[in-house]
Image: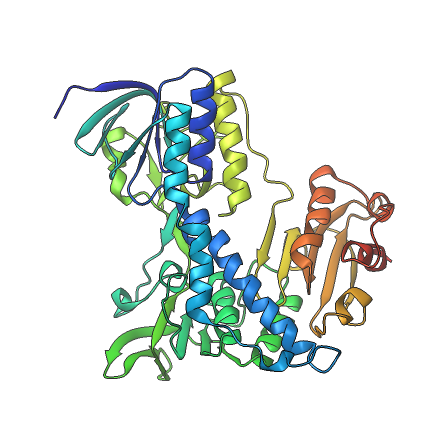
Length: 450
């Protein structure tokens, strides 16, 4: 091994958080290196939200055409998804990313290194046979699927696999009732596959409003997706015709493709954190309120690897801003995850921000409730969608928006206005003063708030 090369900052990972911090520190004159074990670009751009949303867009367009068949759209009921063409369309977004990211690093003067990085000291990293010594190290390695404790778990496919299928299998079984399973299920079902979701208890999508979740579950079933609740997978086995999933209660589900939708965890195993003196607890980095390791102040973390906020790209971007400011301005900045939105890109989408009714009742938080159905709203009815509803929680007295939960077309866009209200503590009266375009999803807000 060659002698150590010295840097101001070494970044592990090339996703949104990693790239942002590296770029800002390099612009400040720092010597920066960035290391990646896979293709440059990170999960969101290559294997997550962006390619998924591309597939969802086509699936939603097909679904909308079918809903509007006979309502002025001739032949809409016969439109189908050409899966190989859809994959080619997706690759038009993902394939250029690694090269573009490499070029951006070169243009910025950031040294990009391909290889699996691991600690060899408190401020030293080894990658691709090189030893890098740094004043600061950022861990921004994202997350990976959690290995479930079931027999045959090695046979499970991941969302990475689903998003790169050259042909869509006819029978898919999704393990777990989280957002990954629901999103992939809705895409696959609109493409003509037989889809089954197996969930361990009665509450899929646990962190979302359960009244709206129940509506989405029923709507999903009407779309042909079988959803088996109180059905915990016990084993996966290979068969002559594909795979079989056995549940703890003795049921058996045949499939050509079995998806791991049972959650993700920080991707830390390859880093040899003990060698760096970086403390871990229950699979998560132990960081302080500044996103700095509590046991090694050289090390910071951001995004899914930090596991402080929800595992979402906007959170990673926010973490990156906090870390960059702490590195460049002094370590006194803290993340604020108030008003982080979360969306299940089912068809239609389910969106959430802030306090849920379940959490408020559990914690004894007082609230005023606004809820209702939106299927007859003009902006919903004209799409042919039948599943649409809302629930808004307001603070008694002040009228501040505590939480908002939406199901229906444009939910993923309208929720952002409620997110602004939650983050800035806007009142229902202030939000209702919005003079929005009409008819639009935003124009429904006044009707929701009553």
